[in-house]
Image (cartoon, rainbow, N blue to C red; front, side, top):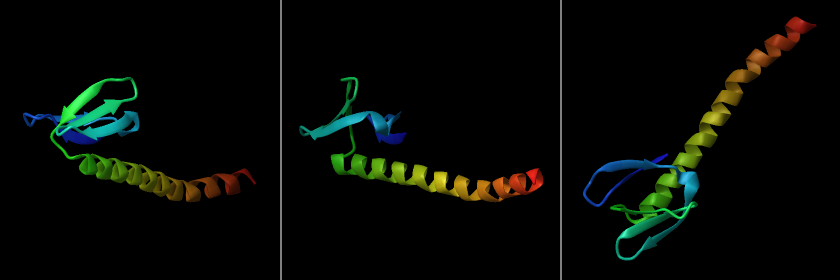
Length: 81
């Protein structure tokens, strides 16, 4: 999820995976995969950057969890032997 703001300033989180495309018309309009449109205060490049950071954080956390589970798996295997 990424944080964006409606034109009046209200914060709103949207699922970055559902963004189909972003237009600047001159307001920024986000079109979601289901066809819904949202007008937001952020510029398109800001939304793209937030989406990239969100995806990078998911990958980083996944890798961290994978690293933390490796010792546990090794212990389980040695106990089975």
